[in-house]
Image 1 (cartoon, rainbow, N blue to C red):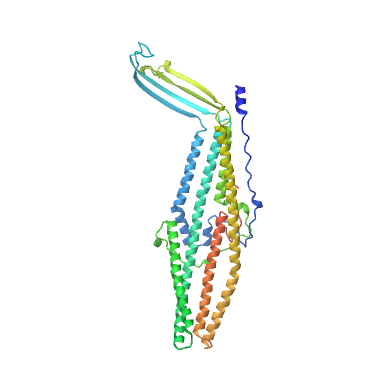
Image 2 (cartoon, rainbow, N blue to C red; image 1 turned 180 degrees about the vertical axis):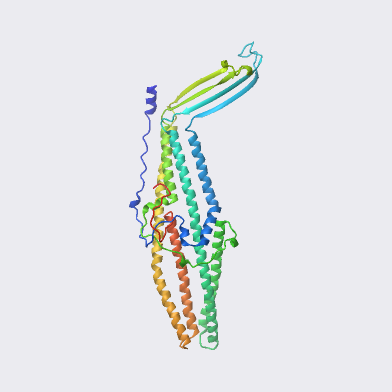
Length: 466
């Protein structure tokens, strides 16, 4: 027996090498402007009641979140199935067969040729000792997949919040631009009337009038474009929340009201909050457990089965002590000649594990790129802000100066309107820059797997293994 066991174990493959995680400290992140980490429900830090309500509705109604949760529940069922394989298996059986035995068969008379009720009641049990841990490895692999699905479900909820916030910011930006555009059109039309009078009296060339007419046409075309863009954002919000537009009751707010700070430092271990990265790592560990389970299949399998019950050819004798049957069945299974099945399965599991590691590294590299791209955008847009503010301040002063000259009779309304239109364009530019700054911060939030509190203290959050 010992010789057989040794022979069976002689061809065991080597253990797979432990996975080498890419050290986060070797990665480089672009410098960030300022602020502190983190806040899990980051959108609430914006103090926008409408946005809070939209995110809550979207996360409750999202079909994507529902699918992700269903996949997590499915993985839980796999865990239960693998966990059940670890315990003792038992079953109870009972049967009665009303049968006439042939008088000309292998049972001779006086039993042959008569009718009997063959009855049996039994209880059977078996237990796999799992000496080599194969069933435990399969259970660990199922638990790893369940954890990965849990990360994905949580990540989907966060992604819904990101999509809602992006649509909300764009909606507010477009709404503000529409207000500015209406004021711009009013000034352009007033300017057009003045220019028409001056052209009719021969004080101005027709070309100047044509330029103003083109400017009005451009503004009206932009108004149609903004109306379309606003409708598109409404569709996004309606789809995400599964609510009619009238039920959303959105209040228009200036985007400049929303805090736009960024952490002074971005600890790389915060990347572990990214649900896709945590899910990828959980799948690596699950794949390694599958490899160990495939490797354990090379060992001899030992299990024990037993049964006890009653068996009789007549029902009236079934409960008598003489009808008792019992047995014990120790079993040993040694894989000898399997035509390479075990090795090919082990090879496939190892390749699956290598793929899982490669996918983890891929997600990690993408995570670092996402963070750096968001930081570069933020740094560039924040750098533009003071210069735009300076231009607006100068133009506001110019508008005031021209207004003073108009009151003194030293200038005309056309010059005042022209200066006001330039200021209006700068205000429109500021609204667009505010939108881009917020969208860049949302991108950073998504890239880092969570939000940050501009005024709070830094607390490292981990939603998965680091």
